[in-house]
Each structure stands twice: as C-alpha cells, then as structure tokens.
Image 1 (cartoon, rainbow, N blue to C red):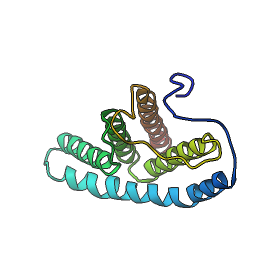
Image 2: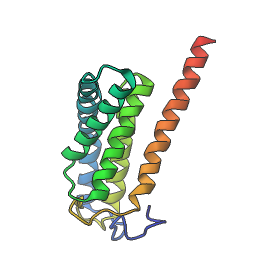
Image 3: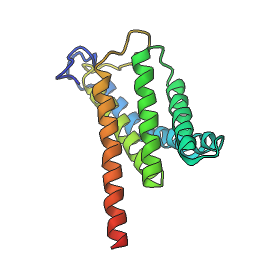
Length: 171
C-alpha cells in the first residue's frame, strides 16, 4: 500500500529502539492468541449459529457469513466506513476460508500472518516509538481496496489448495 498510497500507512521513518523491541516481543507473544480467539468465536461459533437461523443451505451460508463478518467488524470498533467495510471483508473472507477448507486452520493462519505482518511493519516504521491504530472517522480511504483484494486472493488460494488436495485424495 505504501507504494500505491504513500500517505495511507501513516509511517514516519524506520527506527529500532527498546520500545520497538518490546513491542515486537508483545506482538509475537500475544497476536497469535488474539487471532485464534477471534477466529474461534466468529468462524467456529457465530458463523454456524447464525447460519442455523435459515433452513436452506445457500441462504444459510450467506446469513452466517454476513452476520459473522459484521460482528467481526463491530468488535474492531471503527467509526470509519472504509475501515468498517475492510473489517467486514476480512470477516467474510476468513469465514469463506473456514467453509472451503472445512476447518479453522486456514483462517487462523491468515489472521495471525495478517496481524503479525501489519503490527511488525508498523512498529519498525514508527521511528522507534509506539504506534496506535487510528480507527476514527476519516482514518481509512480507498487504498483499503488493495488489502480487500489481498483477502479475496487468499480465499481463492485456499479454494485452489483444497480443490487440489481433494483431487489427490480421490485419485
């Protein structure tokens, strides 16, 4: 995103200080636990529970994905419509990954990788200072469409992997 929309990330300069090292240790230790918890809640509990409200399979899938995706966006607490939309896309994308892969491993791996990468890059690009995620109104913009496309691409990759794995098992 920094190449396409240089102002979007809000980076100041590369810097490593004690604060940076401390933040990175916290990221590595806490982010996987946080991401696993969110995926278990939204993909393993909310998605199937909401889907159970509808009898027909395809509409049930849509209801489950939309409810869990919107719930995911709500708990991330953004007042900005671009960020809220992006969080919804992440929620629906990881929901699709769970459905396609018939498990929670793919969405957990994606969520952990996404959060660790995001936090690590923002930490080292904060010029040695701590950084905060700005989720206020007007903090997001159309550059988030790039990240949304990455989410869609990850769903496609999971689908292709699962398709190949099922063909191999069948053959």
